[in-house]
Image (cartoon, rainbow over all chains, first blue to last red):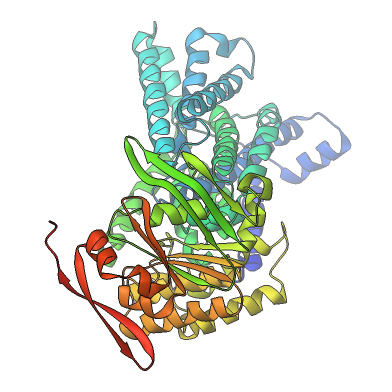
Length: 335
Length: 259
């Protein structure tokens, strides 16, 4: 692998945070309808409920916030899972929580509850994620090792995927199938401030659990025995990381649908810049995820293809070739 | 610190890996754990480090159990170098060695001057100063082993448990590492080291513990433990014994067909 110069951590994190804020501003500024941003801000500040004000607070702002929050979650959880499993191919959904959140949302669609009130869908997703987490704990118990955790994640994921397919299979009307399928592709369109308010506490709790595990992840890079001999309680660490990923990723998927590759690719790209230290990677990868997702979401609006490309589709279309290049590089290194 | 194992047994499935092991390791001495493959050396070392829960028996640290002492506290007092120690990510050598100071650091606190000084000492002691800026994936197996040993030394613990730290090293660095471990013991820490090389074990250790089939077959002064009978029974080998420059040496010489 190329030996990249390593910028100071604070500079890197600060730069990415600034980029994130800048992209959030751009995200607020662009859209399909002609829109006077300064007038909208003036109206909001003056408390006037004009159309521009509503567009700003109910459409543009939540979309930018949700993009940053979801991207941060995916980047952070991806880095944490890669650190925990000591595997560069781990991604936020590796413990099955993404599929389960998707299933929860699909069941809400399927049961027709989605139309009954606005937050039914994300609540269903969060419910799915929580059920999956409980199931995961029941499967692996407290003392289980990494392999058991991965296997349990794969099992939960496969089961949730199967039930999702079953729901689609049994769907009484084809429109529901189309709707569900599109939702599953992941998008930030038409998310409201209610979504942000619902997801933020869960995500923030998850972020805290993940971000506070940095040192333990550094220790864990030397193997289970060495990390334990360094004083880290590994069963507790696993519990904390799984709970953190489940809360944050569950909330993200519940609101935005499944957005792939961000959590896989971002930690990878940024790892050399933090000297491959898993603890240092956490915050940086979260910020990088936010930057990537905001950029992709701005991209789908700028391209202007209608109906709008789904965010998850764009990240996968861009992300998969990146994975090719990654494998190619790994092969060249003989790793 | 004094580590004491009493009636220690370990069972995996139907196999007994350790049977009723009773041993004590104190400060300032260097003890070699020897024995043929599968004798239970690594299993014993892991139990001594508090990394495995015994099926029966106890391990105590100055009379306290791991539970009473707490893992975080033990981590500052006992350093463990695993047999297949490996860093998953290609971090830089100096950063690897700095991980050795994690047990001493308070939450959210940065590295103190004492931490950095300990890291510098560990790098110097293991002849790793030149390697400090290199990434682990650019090192040879032996260089990597030395860097990992430096990580364990940086803990500056009262007790160092090392599982085959010289297996991958060239003769120069084997001798260098054994001298280094002797220095650690001379400065007052306890050292328990798993070794396959009987010549090095005899030459550098104060005491040897010979394990065979999960039992302690012999323990004591190297010359007594490496007796012809013990070597024949445990290893099925015959060794040459001699004296050079005022020190005894043992050289494995010939296989003996098990009777």
